[in-house]
Amino acid sequence: APRLPCAQAEAVPGAAAEGGREALVLYALMALVNLTYNNPEVQHLVRELSGIPLVQQQLSSAAYDVRRSASFCLGNLVKDNDGNACVLVSSGGLERLLLCLNDEDEDELSKTAYSTICQLGEPGLAKLLELVGDSLRALRPAARAGTTLPRRTVAPPPLGMPQQWWGTHVRPPPPLLREDEDSPIEDELIEDGLNGMCVYDAQEITVAREPPAPPPGRMGDPLYTAAVEQLERCLPVLNGMVYEFE
Image 1 (spheres, rainbow, N blue to C red):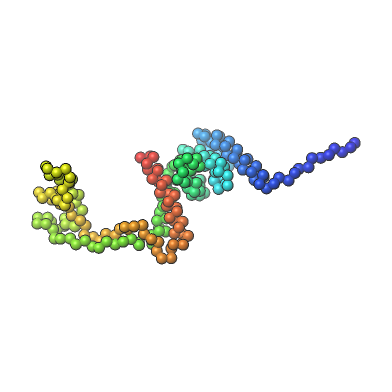
Image 2 (cartoon, one colour):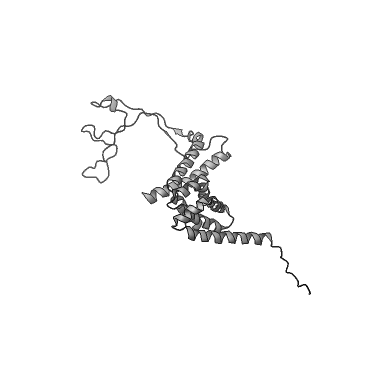
């Protein structure tokens, strides 16, 4: 019998193969998003099968839609699930989600990543505070470069005021108004008793009048730069949490 010609498999170009893999990952993530929505059993199953780190890895994908779907899926996995949140935080998921944030209001990936961070609950909040603390400790040498104001000269206490009260902070009363004026009287104090006494602390005050410049030799320090960038990512998230949940 004559042999029929066999179809030979053609080599798939690398770019096409990569695109096909990304499409497969994307559809798998979309399916998992639907399965994990408000489904504690699937949330638990994904954790037991070590699926959370696998989903987290897709936050580093070159494809935007894959990163967005991975962030969405992680949000479903950690919602009302402290066990999954702890796994994601301990595997570095919070830091990876922070890298997905930006200032563009219409960026779906950024909005989804922020929502996922908020869903992390106490484990996520504790990690955020830890990251802020680490950054501040790294910046401590630069913080010491503040400007020191000269020591204030404090006059002796007024007649009748105990010495121990002088040099402490006393809240001044509201500004007074003369009957024929509409603006507060400047540099006037109530004279009847101590209620209107405005005094100042005689201690040395250290403030940074301008953002302190990095100490010499730290301008190109990658640890210094990383600490600043980490604060720039963490602090807006904490501020948003306070505003959203107050």
